Image (cartoon, rainbow, N blue to C red; front, side):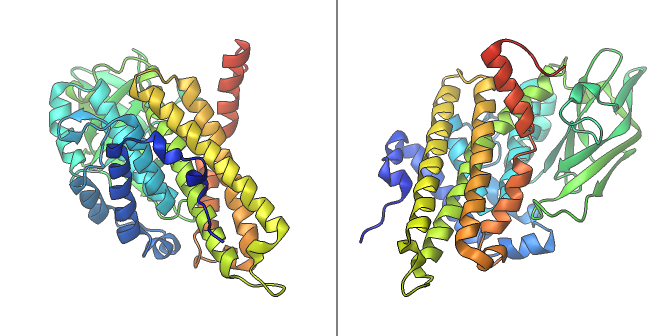
Length: 389
């Protein structure tokens, strides 16, 4: 009997241009060559060789790839999404590293920075020689960033910043930080070298998810910055929220990559694992699981591609991206759980990627807006009534 991948079953690849398929292929090859052979060990060790990988990613043009100018590749949004899908098929933590670099740190500078800030940082970040982090979330203010306690006080021509940020990807290894703070003038953003006196980053240990990712607490103690470090076009909370929407778009595709990898691993296992005198893939309950997975996986992919097409013509709204994240992250997590059940006990080991994807997706469900917050965003869009307060 011949087999069909669910994406082939619905001829999804016909939705892609030749250039998009080429970018997806280059990214997939990089993941297969550089990530898959070592990701299980990196996950167990709680580490990721960011310095080495970042410059290799820069060499193939994946850092800030959807931005234009300043050494960035300037691809369309769908191509960026497809790259995120392949990166997360390797590991969610690996895709998070690239997303934070390009869609949070670089995007903030690109959209809200001065020409001097863009020229100083973006070419270095595009090549992977400089690594960025993005500090918005605080220990007590995640879903409600407007209540942040980090404060920037004007002192002559300088700003003095005190406070802390939590759950910051790349924080301990970053060369440049984007940090958001309250001020007498409203919420403001700053870009600065992590060598600045008064800045420190503490590695968060004992994680059970996204272990192949460096997560930090950022601390600012009387950190003094010149006004030239302020992002001049960031004049309200809307600026960091738009950065989050940019990164969230990558998750819409990325979650599909994690789910696809779980499906392909489970199918390969079920085709060779014998029980009751034959492969378990022949049993009705197992085939029922695969039918459900294939349908949900393909639906998620088509949703991602639709949002990508809207974004390519500057028509994608934050509510649409919220729907993509709301559906695809949750669907990917359910697919991972089902695939794990197909592998039985073997599914909990690092010999197979499924359990690693599953615990990573528990975090993906929460970050860049929790599942519940996106539910309320959609509820507001549908009813016209805000349930946030």
